[in-house]
Amino acid sequence: MTIIAGRARLTSVHVVAAVLVAAIVARPWLAEALSAPAVATVATVFVAVCVQALPFLVLGVLLSAAIAAFVPAGVLRRALPSRAGAAVPVAGLAGLALPGCECASVPVARRLLGRGVPEAAALAFLLAAPAVNPVVLVSTAIAFPGEPGMVVARFAASLATACVMGWLWQRYGRSEWITARVPSGACGGRGWSAFADAARQDLVAAGGFLVLGALVAAVLGVLVPASWTEALAGRLVLAVAVLAVLAVVLALCSEADAFVAASLSALPLLPRLVFLVVGPAVDVKLAALQAGTFGRAFALRFAPATFAVAVGCAIGVGLVVIGAR
Image 1 (cartoon, rainbow, N blue to C red):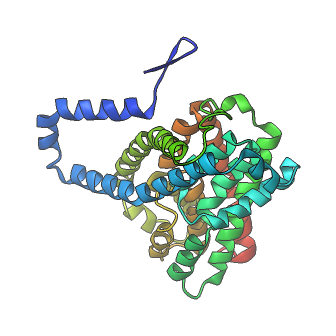
Image 2: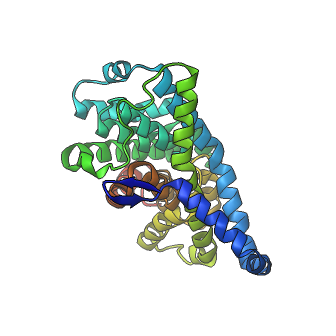
């Protein structure tokens, strides 16, 4: 266990080791418990979330390592406007270049911070990349044929969420809340050796918390009855609130969530838009990744604020683009 300033610091390695030891010790009881239908469902959902998210996490780790090993810090700073306020929307639009989910954007944002990119811009990229990239927009168009407004509204609301959070961080955020920052001199070498070291560090930092977040998402997802959503038809405000919370609980990958939203055909489009905007911005899996990557002090502040902003942006943009339907 890492010791920092006289305090023991929990890392993802310790989380994974503790889970493995507990599984070995409790193997006889686990074998009996896993035969229960509800537990089997939780296990299936857990594996599905991990399998769904892991490729994008690896993609993000590799991109993060490439930034650390091959891109000089000055290049990234010069690519953004000198004013932090103007850099936020530019960083948000840069999310168009990373076709991945939120698992990919977290390690990349962490590395951007370590390379001197302004915090507000890096966090705007973190929120925008999973929601405004071409893969997500195309999947939304396929899931909602004949509803181009859903694609436009999702793009606009997600980009607005990223920019508003970036500007809020610029105004109210504090650097000391990010307690697990990559030092600016970390992985300062060049070439493939530095690439491998950076990739290993980022994967260890995020992998264990992905597993923890997937487990929470699986348990909560099974506990939410499907009949609840069917009872929401005709109750717009309640449907918005429930689907916003459901997006946090289910922790779906942003490339797949549009098809889940489309399947909720009994509900109006507006609450389904809220589901699509909130999910890639904040869910239990992403909160666990953020806590492991940036520190708990950051996650405890950033996640609730992101939830409120995402809901507000989705409702505001949705009422203009698709109306209250």
